[in-house]
Image (cartoon, rainbow, N blue to C red; front, side, top):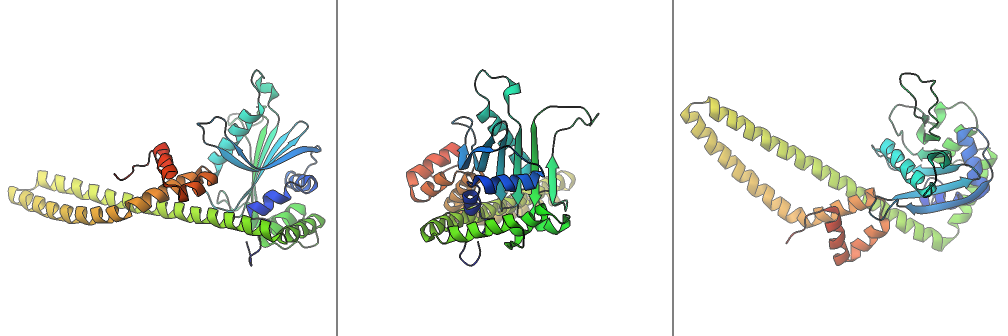
Length: 322
């Protein structure tokens, strides 16, 4: 989002443009460096949940050709668990496409693509192609039928000149250059932004999602800080116990008194802080979990519906103040 306008790298704009079969097909072909079959249908912003009790996934663009399926995602937020996320997406797509009674040979070839606004694996590469191979004999044919690709837009200049470099350059900078497809994407972005009602609606949703991500990071930081405090307390307690065991009676008595005094002071301080922050922390934890599960509708409802929020807290096992 720049100057109040959505960019191609913003997921609402990306999802909208990927509903155009020709634009979507060209983007996939540039990334794979090969032609694909005619696209039968595209589903964007689709929530896939293998069962009602399973963690769901939200697909930016699910693409079906005659024999293959593709999932193409725009990832703007840095996540340390991208590899496991791709693994879960693969499992969800396989469960979705294999019908009851069909054999595993019926699973269609599947390619999952993540276009990232960061280096997904911090190795400095512009493209990461991920496959399953036999470590003992890499030439062995596994026949699993899937492939994962993660692209790092900031590393566009590390690619040789060509259409993939042009694509990642456009994703990263918003500058179309002279590439015909990038020009078409830029025109489509400009046209979509002229729809003021759609743009404002999507910007509000995008801002809400960014706020939830901030809350998730705050909750994580608080958790880390609390963990450090607990670790320090455990270290103090262990050191005190060892000192009591090894010291003389006078030392034991002195150490015990000091430990009690310090523990009482720290306990009071921590209790007061936790009491004040408990309610906000629980809500932040819930919102972080909902964001991580990509349950944006639930997050929006929980923000205004206290009874529904309590229900979600019980679902996630978040303790509630009496």
